[in-house]
Length: 617
Image (cartoon, rainbow, N blue to C red; front, side, top):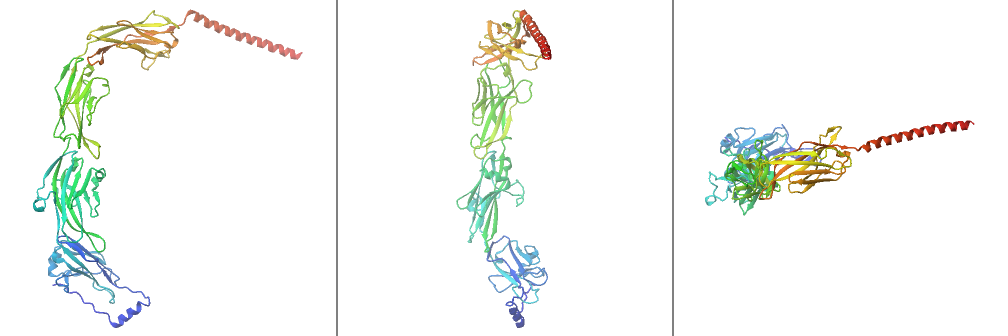
C-alpha cells in the first residue's frame, strides 16, 4: 500500500503574528528550504538519471528524512510515492518492483542531502518530481518540498561503422577483419547522428580493446575523440602521436567521422569501436550526457615487418683468382609493403675475414633513398652496388684481391615513416654466410740492406743499399721500397714506431719522410731491384737503426692497385764517427782554456798583494 503524503496545518494566528514581529525587529530566525535542480530536465529513455535534493535551515536532528513523489502529466494532482529514506513500504505498486530490484533508489549523500537514481528511464517516468522532507521543526516556517520537471525523450542516437549497413542500420555483429602492414596507415570511419528535437551536442571517440576481451570502460582504451565542445583529444598512450601528426580525426559531412592512424605499430592491433555520446545543457548551465551508444568497427591485425623480412644470397660459395670480378646477389623477400610513402628499405653487404667473429665490416650499401656508398677501406676501388630487380640487389667488385676473401652477408633493414619524413627502423635481417675464396698471388719477397763503406763520419754522405729478390707473382708485378729508422734513447731503441725516412712507390714516384737530423735526403732506384737511400751531411742526430721494407704490387684491369706481398730487411746501424783532427782539437781547446784561467788567477793574486803593501807604505 502506497504511503500518503502528510498534510501540514497552517500556523495559528498568534504564532504568525509573532513571526511578523520578529522579522522587522532584526531578531534571528531560520526557515526550512528544500533545494532541487532547476528544470525542466531532458533525458532519454533507457538511460540513467540522477536528481539531487538537500534541505537547509531546519531544526531537529542532523539526519533528515526524504520522500520522493511523481506527478504524471495525465494526473497532475495525483502524487505517486516513489521511495523514502524512512519507510521501506513507501513505494507505490507501479514503482515497487523497480525499487526492490535496485533500479530506482534513493542514495544518502549526507544527513541533509540525497539523490534519487533511476537506472533505466521509461517513457512513463516523465512528470514533475517532488522531494519532500517531513518536518522536525518546532514551528511551521519555510518550504518542506521542492519540485523539478523531468521530460523523457525517445532514443534517437544512431551509431554504425562507415559505410553503414542496409538502410542505415548498425553494422553487422561480425565486423570485418582488417590486415595492415607495419608502417601503413590505418583508416576507420564511423557514422553518428541523432534526430533529437532538442539542441544537443555529439561527442564521438574511437577506442581499441584487446581482441576477444569484454568491452567496457575499463577495458576500452580511447585512441582519439571529438568532445562535445569540438575539441580533439587523444588517450594517454596516443597523445604524443596526435601532437606529432601521426594520429588524425576529422568530421566529413554532417554525420561521418574518420580516424587515421599513421605508421601502424604492433601495439595498434585489436578491436576498434566507435562510441557516440549525446550531451544537453541543463537550465543551470551544466552539460549532462543523456545518451551513449557504441559500435564495433573492425578487428585489426598488424603484420610486423620483423615477422616478414627475409634475406637470401647467391649464387653460392665462390672461388676466383686475383683480378677477376666478383658478383654476389641478395634477394629481399616476404609480405612487405612497397617502398614509398609508408615504408623504406636499405640493403648492404658485410665481409668478415675467414675465422673472424661477428658480421664484419661494411663493403657497400644502398640507403633508403637509393644512394650507394662504400665502407671504410674500400674508397677508390671500382665497386658497384645496384638494384637489378624489384627486390634483388647486386654487389660487384671489378677486380678481386686476396684481401677480399672471407665470409659475406647481406644485411637488409626496413623502416617505417612517422610524421613528415622521419624514419624509424622497424626490422633488420641478415642472410646466411656466403664464403668467398680468392687465390693468393704466391709472391715471396726477400730484402738485404747494408751501409756502403761500412763506416761513415760526421759531415759525410751515408749511402744505404737494398737489394730485393722476388719469387712468383703474375706478369707486370711492380716493386716499391721504403726506408725506416728507429732512434736510440739512453742507449736502447725507442719504443715508438719506426719513422719513415723516404721511399720509391710502385709507380716510380719518390716519397720523402722526416730525417732525424733534418738534413737533405735522396732516394733512388739504382737498378731494377736495387734501391738506395742517401743521407747528406751526416750529423750525430742521424744515429739509429735503419731497415728497408719492399712491397710487391699488382695493377688490375680497372687500374686499381693492391699489395700482393711485403718483406723487411735486417737492421742496418748508422753511427756517425768523428774525424781524428776533431779528437785533437777538443783537448787543445780544453787545455788552452785551463791555462788562461790559471794565469788569470795567479796574476790577480800577485796584483792584490802588491797593492796591499803599497797602502801600508
